[in-house]
Length: 424
Image 1 (cartoon, rainbow, N blue to C red):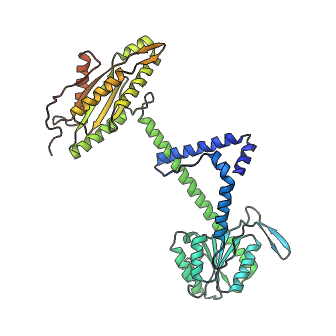
Image 2: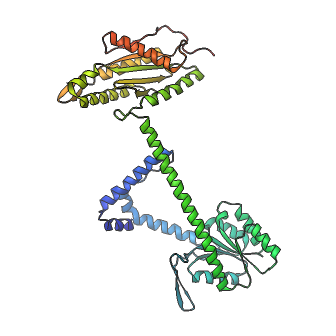
């Protein structure tokens, strides 16, 4: 956290601004996670993290030190970019030789010591294992970038260790150099066929070993670059998915009310019609029209007309049930889809909507405006062959409501019980 605030100071950002910026990043990520259907965690405010930063860092350092010490007394991993060799200090050159995590597996302690000395001279992090089975466990736990493995070992030889590692996800990416005193071409071919990347003849020549390590590091660096490219592509794909999801939402959303638009409504009623056909559950709908809406625009201007629509939308949304779907399908017209609802239930819902709009006046332009809506209600019956027929029947009912004097609900269907869904 101190490093974070130090960078903020260089950018002329005080601690409060840095905290707000980081909190904003967290909120954005949680929004992305919701869109991408990824799990996101609650993160404390960064001001709290800053106050607890030293305690958290100390706790993590303790855990790290505990993991570095093996039960068998294996040496700790040293993070070093400089090493002493023969009284001369060697410094790693960025871009030429970067430190790697290296695991040396050999049952000969003196050989491990020699290889370790060469590796640590150029700054690599080195851990050791005395046989193949321990080497397998340490490889899976510490995930080295490179392994130097003796061919002939008790319990599990170098070739068996290589084969076992290549069968794991972690082991497939490790660069493995095998040491051998054998110069039989057939044996070397066998080693390569079993997943070995390079070999080294015994006795070990430190200069040759260093050269082979550089060659191996080039391969490892290329693999890391490939992994970074894959990660960049993955991130780009995630960003593209978010953008596409947002574009889809924009394409299906009415910008004034925030309701889904007509395109969404048509797609959704088709889905609900299919569900109703499959489950033989009732399906109803209502068409809502704002009474005398043209008067608001003509007499008070489009700003007041837009405010009226937004207020009506809020009232409609508040009066509907959780399962109802509402969309703005035209200038002052709304469509409500009522799944699993018969005509009586839909009429009761429509009355709640009508009352909510009527009882919520709007103050705009220095005046108080009292709005009302007319609502046509219809439910699916055996005469209807598709969703369009249901909407058309609700439209007919809306026409009746308008002719009866507005601010009312109407249906063009009988309230008598009867079959709603065609028999199979």
